[in-house]
Image (cartoon, rainbow, N blue to C red; front, top):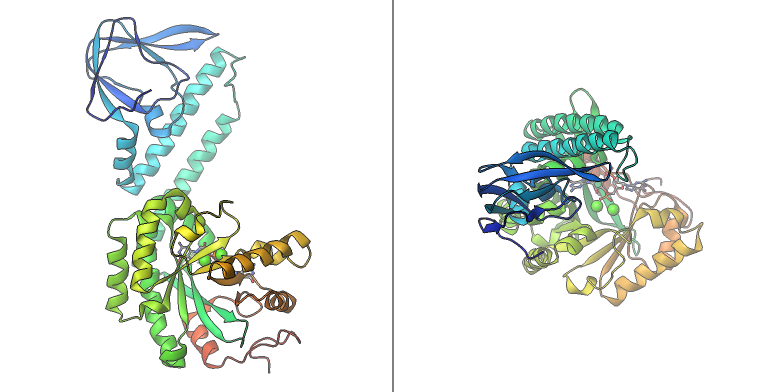
Length: 416
Ligand code: C2E
Ligand code: CA
Ligand code: CA
C-alpha cells in the first residue's frame, strides 16, 4: 500500500473496500462525503455491524498501535475521505502530555481486548480466541494506575528534592586508584523509603520525565565533580559518568541543555562521561551520531553501558564516537565458572583495545574476578568488592582516604 500523507483526500468507489479486516493499516480516515458499511467476520462469514456517514472517524486503532484492522469498511456510494497518517499521528503523540499518552495506550489496549472477546464468544473456534486476555485487561489496568501514581509522586519528588545521587568508584587496575565515579540515581520517598532506580527509571522513561531527571543528574554530577577536584587537585580529578536514556537524545536542544549546565558550573567537559546503551545507536542512528559527535567535539566522552547484552551487530561501533565499553556485569558474574563467559570478556577487552577504546568491567564482587580481569589486561573495574554506590559525602571521604586494595591477598581498600 503506498504511503498516504495526512490531509490527502482519497476517493473510494461504490462497492470498493476502504480497509479490510486483518490487513495492516498505516492511517485513519474521516469521511468527507458518502456512506460506508462496517463489517466483521462472525463464524467465518462477514456480518454488517453498522453504517457511517460524513464526519465519522474510521481505522483509528490500527493507526495507533500498528495491529491489523479489526473490521472491514466498504463504500455504499462513491465516497471521499480525509487521511490521517500513522507516522504523523505518532509524531504528534510523542510531543503530547505524558499522562495523555499513557492513558491513550491503555484505553486502546482495553478496547482491542474487548473486541477480541466479543469475537471469541461469537466464534468460539476463531483463531484469535484468547480468554486469558480478560486477566491481561485487569493487569493492564493495575499497571496503568500504578504507573500514573508513581509518575505523579516522582514528578513532585523531583521538585521536592527527594532524588539524590549515589557515587560508585571506577578503579584503574594499574595502580588501583579511583579514576572516576558512576552517578546512580536514588529516590528517598518520604513514606516508602529508598526506592531503587530499577523501579522508577522505567516509569520516568515511559512518561518522558527522564529528560528532567537526566538534567538534574548532570547538574548534581557537575557539583560533585567540583568537590572531588578539590580533594585530588585538578590533575588527577576523577571523571563522573552520568546515565542518559534514549529519550534525552530525542529532545530538541539536547546538546545546548548539556553545555548550558556544564558551563553554569564551570565543569571541565572532560570530567563528564555520558553512559548510554546500545539501543540508542540502533534505534536512532542518525540522531545519535549527530548528538554524540557534538558531545565528543565539546570534550565529553561517551561510554556504552551493559555492552554485550544488546544487539549482536558490531558494525556500529566504529561508526559512532565512542570512548569506552562497559562490560555487563552478567558476564563478570559467570566468567570464572563458565569458559564461554570468560572468552567473551576476553574478546570484548581485545575488541576495545583494537578500536582504541577504554574498557570498564562492571559488577566485580570478588578479588579473584579483579585478578582475572587484570591478567586479561582490562583497564578499569567497578563493583561492590571495590566499593558500593554511596552518598556524595561518603564517596568524597572514600576518595580522601583511599588506600589501594590488594587483589592478590583479597585485602579491600581501607582495610589496612
Ligand atoms: P547500570 O547503569 O548498569 O548501573 C550499574 C548497576 O549495578 C547499579 O545498580 C549498581 O548499584 C549495580 N552494581 C554495581 N556494582 C555491583 C556489583 O558488584 N554487584 C551487583 N550485583 N550490582 C552492582 P542501580 O544503582 O540499582 O541502578 C540500576 C540501573 O538503573 C542502572 O544500571 C541504570 O540503568 C539505571 N539508572 C540508575 N541511575 C540512573 C540515572 O540517573 N539515569 C538513568 N537514565 N538511568 C539510571
Ligand atoms: Ca550505567
Ligand atoms: Ca551497566
